[in-house]
Amino acid sequence: MPADTIGGGQERPKGAQLWAKGAPLDAAVHAFTVGEDFLTDLALVPFDCTGSAAHARMLAGAGLLDPTDAAALVAALKELQGEALAGRFAIAPEQEDGHTAIEAALVAKLGDAGKRIHLGRSRNDQVLLALRLLMRERLLALAAQTAGLAAAFLAFGQAHAQEALPGYTHLRRAMPSTFGQWAGAYAEGLLESLGDARALYAKLDRCPLGAAAGFGVPLPIDRERTAELLGFDSVQRNPVDVMNSRGRHELALLQWLGGIAFTLEKFLWDVALYSTEEFAFLDVPPAFTTGSSIMPQKRNPDVVELARATCGQLRGAAHIVEQIATGLPSSYHRDFQLLKKPLLGALQDAAAWLGVLQALVPALQIKAEAAAEACTDELYAAHAACQLVKEGWTFRDAYREVAAELAAGAFEPDRAALSATHTGGTANLGLAAAEAELAAHRAWIDGKQAFLRGKLEALWETT
Image 1 (cartoon, rainbow, N blue to C red):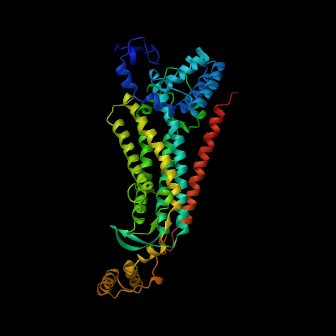
Image 2: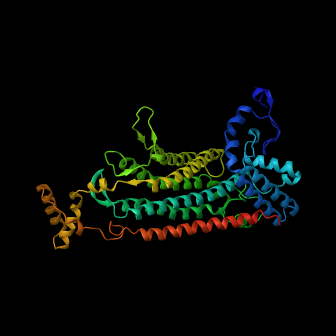
Image 3: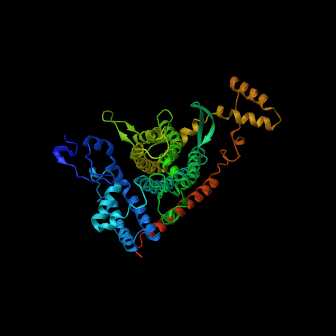
């Protein structure tokens, strides 16, 4: 096939790429280097339009773009963003990416004004900005879902605060617990991740635009103005660091999701175990199960198992990003193109995953009688030893005394006298304090989302 043709002998449009200089382009090389970018970039187009609108306003303010052209560009970019959000914006394979498609659409709408939008930037910092805007938005949305799931765990814990449940170590019965303590544990893990989200947001809350190819531009651009228009807290100062951060922030976001997965994987395993006939402490409602194609009696917790597998899938996405982005010298490399697919896929999967789990938790039904029967006397052995210590025994002597009673079959604990009253113990779960912490996280999320909405609404104003 000739180097300047595509399938069926069709000629490839010359100059369709922003970087094209008139030389022939090998079709196989073009297809390989573009990959799926013309499809993947569709998710970035709305954010690319937002970043381009701020860039146009900054150029006008810096005296580098006629204000009339800037206003026309902002209006056209708003139209293109609407098309993208409605699924009507397309990127042709020969255009390679969303940046080229947006600029081509602007030129088609505005003529020479559309050609002025790229002044003072490179596709390198342009894609970084689009990704930064997307990640910032997705982080807040996923944090809101995580907060909703934490609330579901706390509500479950409050409803079943004193319902008995055996505590296990090594998958053997160990000490008495409650469903409230069990559910509260997963709420606490998610609260920790919500705290991490604030630090992660601070990483993402710096504007990369103005770094261009990684060394700045010889123009009097106003990077601080761009950052302010987009609601960033500050500018990411060093242009080389801007390029070096490609992959660093994607990895940080995916590792944050991996931390949530670390917490929820244990919950999902517990549900899978506790809902078996052998444990019979929980029931997964029929709406959350599927059936067997051969066994009429079967109800399978497929949602639980697929959600558990998603935990590994999210960690796998982080691993892919880490493998692509590490081991490279400084500045920009085309390797970074391959970071987008695992990032965007993981963010989409995580949103669906958290949504399903938020519905599952309140639907779980406890089997209180079976769980209470499993809390047999020997689970109170450590409690009984502690009771002897309160009476003056050393702990080691008390331990041996209780062990001897167990061996002789004479152990009869006074269950009414034995409870853990410290913070987090079965008699003092601390759920109210967890709810207060959750409320603070939700207020922070809501505040950030409202702030960004206000900034973006102001950005698109025509005046």
